[in-house]
Image 1: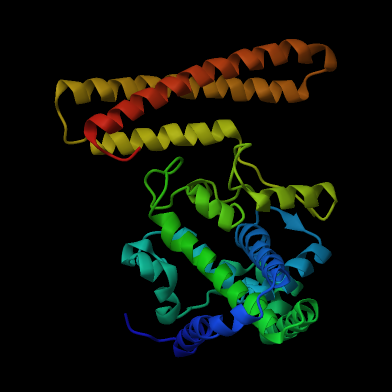
Image 2 (image 1 turned 90 degrees about the horizontal axis):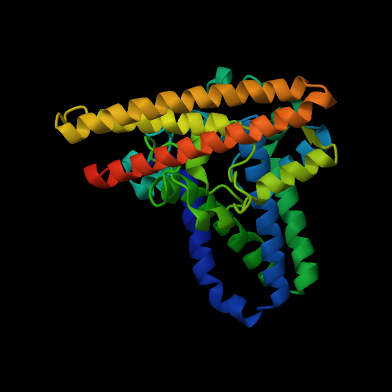
Length: 367
C-alpha cells in the first residue's frame, strides 16, 4: 500500500498516540460523569451516521424535514467522518461495486485495508451524477461547503460543555473527544471489515457481507450487514422483533412525530422470494460440475420447490392486494384465506431451508 493521504494518516495516528499518552493523566481525573459524557457524545455522533448519513442520505430509505436534517448534520460533527455528501458518495460506490477493484474499502484487499488502510490510499474521483439528488439539497450542500467550520464550532462547544460538567478540561478532552472519536471510527470501520468477514450470510450468500449481532449493538443496528447489502433501500437493518436496531426505532419514532416520512420497507414475501432465487442460483452453480445421481436429484428437488414457492407467493401477494381493496364485509373471509396461504407458504419455506441446509453440509459450501 502506498500512502497518498498523508494528512489523514497523520490525523488518525496522532489521536491514537494521544489516547495512549494521556491515559495515565486521565486516570487521575477519572469520573463517572466523564464516562456518561462519553456515552452521550458517542451515541449522538454514531446515530447521526446511521440515521442520517447512511439510511437517509446514502440510501434514501426515508425522507426528513429540515429540522430533522439539521439535527443530523450538526451532530455528525461529533463523528469526524467527512460531510454527508462525500460520505454518501463513497458509500454508494461501495454498494455499486462491492467486493471489486472499484470498491473503496473492498474486503478482497484484506481485513485491515477494509478497516482503515483504505483511508490513507483512496483518492476520491468525485462523480456529481452519483449524488445528484443530494446536490439539490441546500442543507447537505451547505454542510459540505462549510464542513470545517461545523467541526470546529460543534466540537469546541462540546469540549467546554464537558469541562463544565466534569470539572476537568482533560477529562472532557479525553472522553468527550479522543475516546468518542476513536470509538465511532473503529465501530464504523468494523462494518467494512468485521461485517464482511465474521458472521452469518442470512440473506445474500453470494456477497461477503455478513450479519454480526455484536456489531449491531456497537453500531446501533448496522451489524445486520448481510440483510442491508441484500435490501439496501429498507430503512431497517434488523428486521426481526428481537434484532437490536436503535436506528430503526429512532426513524420509526420520528415518523410518528411527523419529522420524517416515506419509510421504505421490503415486503417479507419479497425477501423470502429473493432468498429462494439466490439459494437456487448459488447451489446450482456449485453443482454444475457434479453429475452423480445425488446431485441430479437435488437439482430436480430445488427446481420443483422453487416453482411451488413462486406460485404460492404469487397467490398470497394477489390475495393481500385483494384484501387491501376489500369492503368491510369481505375482509373477514379474506383474512382467513390469507392466514391459510401464509401457513402454506411457510411450510414450503421450511422445506426449502431443510433441503438447502442438507445440501450445504453434503457439498460443503456456506449456507
